[in-house]
Amino acid sequence: MPQDSRRNCHTDESYHPDRFLSICKFNTQNNTTVINDNGLRIDGRSSSDSRPIFLETGFVTRSKGSSYIEIGNTKVICACYGPKQLQSKDTGLRKGVLSCELKYASFASAVHKTDQANMLEKEYSVLMVDALSPCIILDRFPKAQVDIFVTILEDGGSAFPAAITAASLALADAGIELYSLAIGASLQQHKEWALVDPTHEEENMVALLGECTGSLCIAYMPGLSQVSMVSQQGYITHQQLSQGMVTLIELCKDVSTLVRRCLVNSIQRKGQQESSVGD
Amino acid sequence: MAEVLLSQAEKIFIVHGVEDNVRIDGRSCLEYRSFEIETGTVSNASGSARVRMANTDILVGVKAELGVPALRKPDEGKLEFFVDCSANANPKFEGRGGEELANDIASMLSQAYGDKNTLDMRKLCIADGQHCWILYIDVLLLEVGGNLYDAVSLAVKSALYDTKIPNLTLTTNEEGQVEIDLSDDPFDYSEIDVENCPILVTCCKIGKSHVIDPSVEEEVCSLCRLVVSVTRTGHITSTRKVGAGSLLPESIAEMVSTSREIGISLNEALLNKLKGRI
Image (spheres, rainbow over the protein chains, first blue to last red):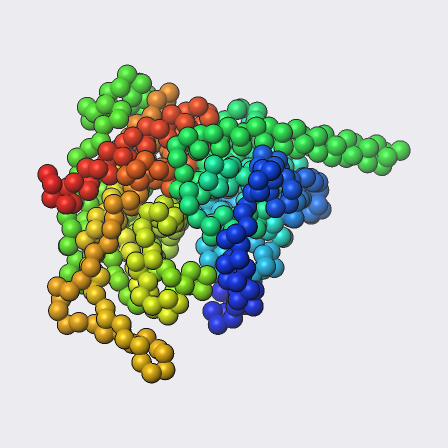
């Protein structure tokens, strides 16, 4: 993927004024906790609750398939193009190739996009290929490739799992044959609490508070009951990891029914449009 | 990765062998190969190590330099990982060819070392918000022959153990600024506590079972690998699935617990070796 450094107008010399505030805020926040005595989080959810989800297909009219997803404040748009002829030299392949590109909009988070975010984009793009290639029947289009472009418009936390769900929805909308959908989900471990579907604040705060914290992100394929991507970091025990995996798989199953309903609705809508054109 | 072409029959031979707990080099599924570690190989670095594991050859150099701490973490030093894929290892790495693999390894290492329980970054701070040590950890892949992640992490931990950071004396001048003095005695240095540094353990799913420390041939046979970073105490600092396959939740749990046990004993063995206890 070509990177044009001129397009990122960020300089090292500038910084967000919030930095001065957040240091003070962090110092006072040592008293406040991520989760209160009643087991409720800052936004009033319990630790296992996820945020409301909105799904829609066909947002990008020129693409083969596209999707838009909102989870709380997180907003992700995704478009899928192809299959088209493979550009690279490896044309002897018997399987198709999936290529993913994930981008944060410059205004996606409170702080302007940094070089670190660019590194993260590359890493997520690679993880996304790992997460989605097991669910596509790649034998159906040899010597061809499918492109997926994801833009994170607003990062309100758990943006990467939302991007995975959006991408599999776009693949299904494009009519590319799949073994199963891939649904993303993440959690943030804070001491003994596993905070499902964390917000951006929770992600940052838990990282700052330290002490036995970690994050876990998975992609689950409900059709095959298999996990297509695991990415975890932090300092957690073996039991917390396996427990977290079970919790997230349950969440993925719930989300997958919503994704299916969204797909059925979009097909019905297309059918109605065609029949009205026919009349 | 070095190109290894296997026929269907050879693959079936390996897969069936692994299911019967016998591998092509005679090991059982959970057996690690012996490997060589050499520390202090690079004279111009603060610390260095070379690991040779079968055909994999890794050279790591650590350089300690002074810098300014990050605004959000004024009392902590920094770790920077760079991976260089030499074209000697694989002609494919020529030019920008090795960039993807290099980024992948570097991000996996920084994730594994990302937690403050692994390496105490506060010890790398010299003056709050003004000066800190930045450790540049440069990994050079000289030859690539299977089980790359494990070999790199072993080399990194050994190089960090070998790292000597010169002691500094701090004085505050009239304007309240910190002045740094470096003694000219080359033996006036401190070392880094690597006790709790993680090691990456790759668990390779082949057929219905999984193997530790896969060879190149075995890597070709498997669709997906799980890389788990484990500390001496058995904490897990990062997990990542690598490759195009998918896994059942139960087999992930199994593979993580296998890697964890291997990781604990490997950490112990490495530390004993480094400290010259064996």
